[in-house]
Structures are given as structure tokens and as C-alpha cells.
Amino acid sequence: MNPVRGQSARTGTADRILDLAEHLVQTRGFNGFSYADIARELGVTKASLHYHFPTKADLGLRLIERYSESFARSLACINAGDDSAGTKLATYASIYRRVLNDDRMCLCGMLAADYSTLPEPMRSAVTRFFEENEAWLTGVLAQGREDGDLSFPGEPVDVARLLVGALEGGMLLARSFNEPTRFQTLADRLIADLIPNPASPPSGC
Amino acid sequence: MNPVRGQSARTGTADRILDLAEHLVQTRGFNGFSYADIARELGVTKASLHYHFPTKADLGLRLIERYSESFARSLACINAGDDSAGTKLATYASIYRRVLNDDRMCLCGMLAADYSTLPEPMRSAVTRFFEENEAWLTGVLAQGREDGDLSFPGEPVDVARLLVGALEGGMLLARSFNEPTRFQTLADRLIADLIPNPASPPSGC
DNA sequence: GTCTATAACGAGATAGAC
DNA sequence: GTCTATCTCGTTATAGAC
Image 1: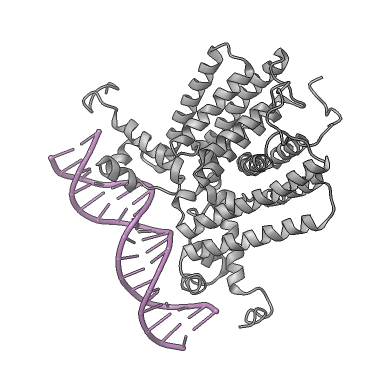
Image 2: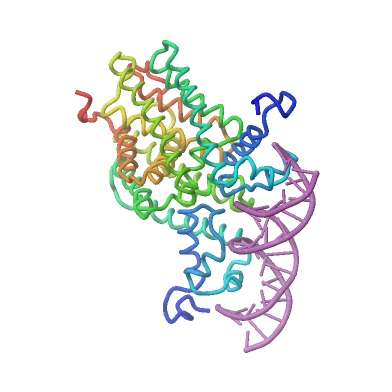
């Protein structure tokens, strides 16, 4: 009953299932793994998995909720500091980079690819994740421009959407090439583009 | 035997299979459809499909080859004109937009998500597709900057990789939200960023 | 909470007739 | 080139004992 009992003070079974399932979705997609994969790896039976998560849709939905909560905590943590907007954006990109360095795709980026095959509750949760990211970025961008830390034309929300789209796509490509530096180069360029007076980085000259 | 016989002057069976399979991969991913789906839709049996494409990997590889050839023709067509680099980039983005307006993801963008579950021949074909796109874009960007049509810091190849990544990610997100305009806004901003003296588009003022 | 056992179905693939 | 028939295996999911 208590969250710290049962597995002799270790992580509960439900959490171990979620941890492994998260990794499987991030690497193979929602249609690229099965309960059998999880059961084998954890040394339990498929029936046991169904006790914790009756259907695969239940498991998937919980995965997105947990991932979104974790992401929200990270964003709140960035806001807690008093970094400049540019630094906040760099830290934001580093969240993606850490996922990629673990050979994973963003959970919701992967599920966006699987989108048309997902049950409705999962779909809504995926788009909500992106909306929350866009809202946070929009705030940082608007504040940053107001403070003179950032400079860009147009609406902050459009820049936010560019950032989310480009970072997700950058992860996708970097993972296919197995070249994480591709992502870093892309992210650096995206953010540098928003910083005013960029003391002329090594141009073509 | 002749490519214009058998189906009473219609498209050959192999091509009809490829057309439908392409659509299925672009909307559901490589692990999100089966031979049974194709057989049902085309009114043939699964065994018939295996005659044309013995394994799903064979079918998948042929899909990528055909898609890449089609893409290469489009790029050659853009090069044939004498448009400015900026116009060429806009036309390039319009290829993606047309795919998206058909409610599809880029075939290779989708397969990039499925990458870790793909057999080796398909993996190489996917990365080759992206390399060809990057090479073409790199050429347009380098020439455009030389001609003064474009302006950007750093290496053309890095901008090319940002463009491919951002366009793929933009498609992914726009499709999840079922808002194609998200993609257009993102693409417009990406390209506008490369054009010198952008007569100050409606800024925050 | 985990197990055994099994249902019910779909997957990719093949043999051989027509 | 397409069919029927079948194989083998994997999939999600449930019933009921422990």
C-alpha cells in the first residue's frame, strides 16, 4: 500500500513497468513493443502487467502523464533561477539533449509519429504536452524580448512553435544518424538566432 | 510483362501496392499496418502481395527508393529553373507542405521514428534520403549566399541540417494538431531568417 | 500482487493448385 | 499473377488459483 513497501524498499512494480515501457516507447514507438517485452525484461508475467495497467492504452496514457509532470517540474526549476532568457532557452534545449544522449527520442515526439494509431485519451495528452511546452516557451520569449535579452520579429508563440518543432525534428534526425552533435549544432543555431548583437560567429570568411 | 498490360492499361499491381503501402506508412508508421490491410483495400489476397514483395522489408525498401527517386526529380526540377535561392527554398518547403496537406507525414521522417525497429537495408536508405536532401540544400544555400540572395552565419551544411530537421519536426507537430498552417508559419519563418534586409516584418510593435 | 492457463485474434510467411 | 489453405508465432486480454 505504502509507496515504499512491497519490493523491499525498492521502486514499486508499477514504476518499474513505467520506466521500462517509457524506454521502449522512446526507442521503438508505441507499436514497436509488447507486454511480452516488458514481462521478459522484468521477470514477471504478462498477466501481472495487466493487473497494474489493464490495457496498453492505460499504460500509454500514464506514461504521457508522468512524462509531462516530469517536464513541468524541469520547466518550473528553470523559472526558479534568475537566468537570462537566452540561458533559459539553452537549458530547455539541454533537456532534449540529455534524452537524446540516452539514445532516446522525446516520448511525445515519438508518439506524435504514432499519433493516428493512438486511442483518443493518449492523443489529447500528447497535444497537451506540446501546448504546455509552447506556453512556457512563449512566456520566456516574450519576457526575454521585453528585457532586451532576445530579439526576433513576429509573435513569440510562433517562435515557440518553431523551437519545439525544430528540436523534435532535430532529435529525430540526430538519432537516425546516431550523431548527437547534429542536435547540439541545430539547437545552438536556433538559440543564437534569437540573441541580439551576436558578435559575428565564425562566418563563411 | 509490359508495364502497360495486365490491369487493362491501368496501373500495375505492384504500383498499386506501393501507392497504398506508402500512404499507410506515412500515416500509421511501418509497424502500424499489415499485409492484411493492403490486401483488404486492394481486393487481393495476402499471398498475392508476397508474390510482388516477398517480405515486408522488401516492400519497405522499395518504398524508400521510389520516394527518394521522386524527391530527386522534384529537386532537379527546382534546379532547372533560374529562381533565386530564397524562391528555391520556398519551393522546397512546398514539397513538404503538399505531403502534409494530404494528411501525411514525410515517408522518411516517419521511418526515422521507426528507425530502431527497421531492418538494415531500410535504415541505410532512410539516412541516404536525408543526406541527399542536405546535399541539395547545402548547394542552394552556398550559392545563394555567394550571390547575395541569402545571408547567414556559419556553414551552409549546418543550415541545411537545421532546415531538414525543422521541416520534419514541423510536419510532425502540425499533423498531431491537425493544423497545417502551423507548418506553413514555421517554414516561412525559417526561410525569412535567411533573406537579407527583411523590410522589418510586423514586429512586436 | 503474482501466478498458470488459455482464449481470441492478427501478424508475416509459404506450399502448391489454377 | 492470383488463388486457397495452412503454418507458426506474437499480440492483447481474461479467468481463476495461490
